[in-house]
Amino acid sequence: EVQLVESGGGLVQPGGSLRLSCAASGFTFSDHYMDWVRQAPGKGLEWVGRTKNKANSYTTEYAASMEGRFTISRDDLKNSLYLQMNSLKTEDTAVYFCAREFLYCGGGTCYTRWYFDLWGRGTLVTVSS
Amino acid sequence: DIVMTQSPDSLAVSLGERATINCKSSQSVLYSSNNKNYLAWYQHKPGQPLKLLINWASTRESGVPDRFSGSGSGTDFTLTISSLQAEDVAVYYCQQYYSAPCTFGQGTKLEIK
Image 1 (cartoon, one colour):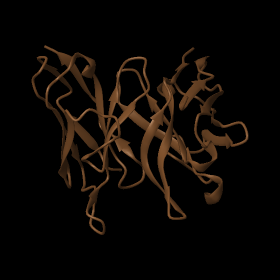
Image 2 (tube, chains in turn yellow, red):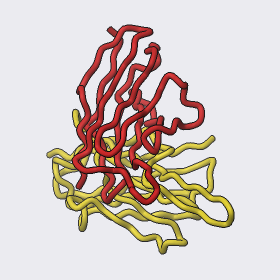
Image 3 (cartoon, chains in turn blue, green):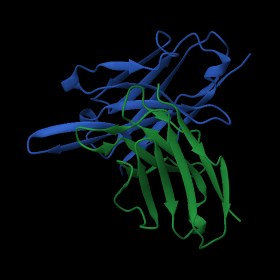
C-alpha cells in the first residue's frame, strides 16, 4: 500500500527537542522530494521544509521561522524521512505531516512540482511546560 | 511570501446543491512561459491524510469525482462541487507552488445544511 506514516510526536517542554519520523511504503521513496507541513490548533497549513533527492544532493530548504532550529534528513535505505526539532517553542505545537512532492518521469527525464500527491495522517507535537 | 486567502471560512450547503470555495493569491501564480497556474486544491477529512484533488488550478487528479472542478487564473481561483454529497464534508485548502515557499490558504470548512 502506498502510504506515509508519521511517528515520534508527544509532549515536550519549551526549549526541548524532538525527532519525528515518517515511514514511506509502496513507492520508490528515493526518487521523491519530501516535505514536512504542520498545522497548529485551529490554524491552517504551514510548510516547514523539504529535502530533495540524491540526484539533487539531498538539498534541504526551510521556512524562515524554522531555519536553524529544525533539520530535515532522510534515509533512502530505510525509506524514512526525519524532522529533528530543537529549541522548541510553544508556538511549534502542531500536527506535523510528511508529504510527498509530485514527480513525473518520462522520456528519460524526471521533473518535480511543489504540490503534494501523498500525505501522512500526521503526528501531534505539544510544546508545553 | 505569497499569501493565499480563502473565502468563506466555513460553508453549509444542502445535499445535491452546489458548493463554491474561493481562493485569492496576493500575487499572480500564472507562469507566463507555459501559461499554467501553479495552484492546487486539497481535501482534508478528520483523521485522514490530506487528498490532492486538483493541480494546475483545473486538472483533476485521477479518481477524483467529476463533481469537483477548479477554475480561475492569475490571482483568483474557485473550487466548485457541483452536487454536494455527504462524503464531501471536509476542510478544503488551496496551495500555490509558483514561488518559494509554497503557501496554503487558511482552509474552508464545508458542512451539510
